[in-house]
Length: 299
Image 1 (cartoon, helix red, strand yellow):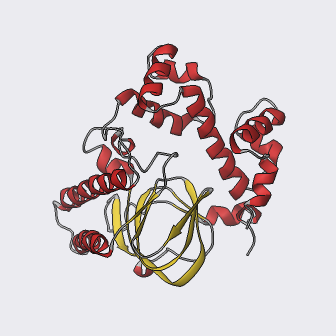
Image 2 (cartoon, rainbow, N blue to C red):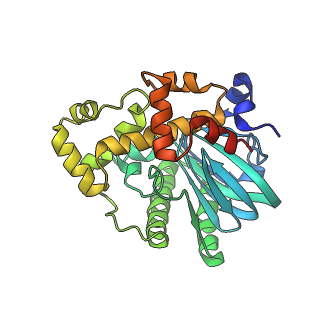
């Protein structure tokens, strides 16, 4: 099989999956089901890109799942915790791979709660420092699957108040997963966190490819640069400059693994003044050159 960055651009474009908002006849921003029974989804080893949030509960099979450059060993009971707009790939699959998935658009839940930071309050979706999975016992998996089947049952028999019913289950599910995730990975940070740090996280996701200046983020968040630095060091343990540098490397890795762009083109895409500056930062943070990283991770 060719490495991901060898796929032609037009082929990779076909592997992007937008949310089917009108699948049920009217706009509904949530869906759920057993992957082997959902049309339009494949479980082969082709890299793909999804534009919505997803929780995938593995019920059979084992192997490795790639989320950008993160490699997750999965088996029965693994929950993949997947934010939007990252490349994904199933590799080294053993046995019959199947699972239950629930996926949704951010606005399905954040607008209802009038909280644009809601999904940033969880430890798993936008935390690049922690793993993107959770491992459940058979008993825990069975309990979650029961909830997902209730969602599927509601989708098969939609009523005028189904949006509220589905949102309630999703809300409970996300909080339950967050509690289990915090215990499994010993995360002590408060669930709801500090609003400024969450606003910074969200803005960074939106702007990192175009803006790496701390002053830009401080101005957008309407605080002084020094206040932003002090706040983020207290809540996230790192100053904004370091958080920005770490996040731009995530974007660089994504381009190296899943695009045909050469190093100079990637440098330009990420708004570095010179490719040498991009090479220097990448090597400083990753421990190898961009080209060596691409070669080492091409299989």
